[in-house]
Image (cartoon, rainbow, N blue to C red; front, side, top):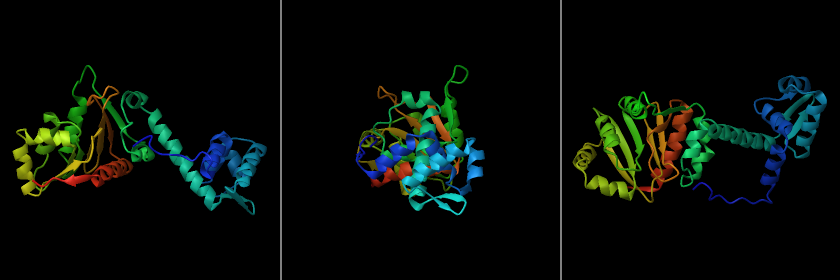
Length: 272
């Protein structure tokens, strides 16, 4: 879970990342060389800095074996390329949490897997949708519009909600299929509800696979054919469906699959 990672503050990785983050120019030069090598005049023009400033940053990077000079071209070493990719990912992840800051600050991500933050950069082109006075049900309506057009649906459902269950099950038309992950608490509510007979029927028809997660779920994630949606719990521990993150890019769907597979790997199939 987020916050569980242990770092060796005496490791080379820590010192090099501190070295890179300690200088805006060092970071910019390293990232400028990710895609291709460059000559001094190109770096100078791209970064808008003097030759002396660029050369100083390059010299510092060379002292850590992060860049090399090939005739007149400056390029990343193999080591430098690895650190440049890590730095690029870090910058993009920070951008995600700075965009729509109210959403991230109001919701609890402490109990989510490390993969959530490590791959957050994939959410860069997300859309934030919330209720407003003119349309109190906008996030729910947008959710249904997207899910009903998907024939392969994967859902992590952290709460027993008749509204969402009805929308999810109603979308299973024709040869549509659903993978549904719930925790023990939600499974108990399902088993005692009027929805359980529908779930049994859909399971027998090979349209639904039900999984039970080994723990408590802290996010509502849906992956459709061409979208993902994400809802979280607020800081008081209440499920919040008034604010939703939608993403319709291939990167966003990739992020959703990474998160879904984490929970899938830590779940067991419920035999119905």
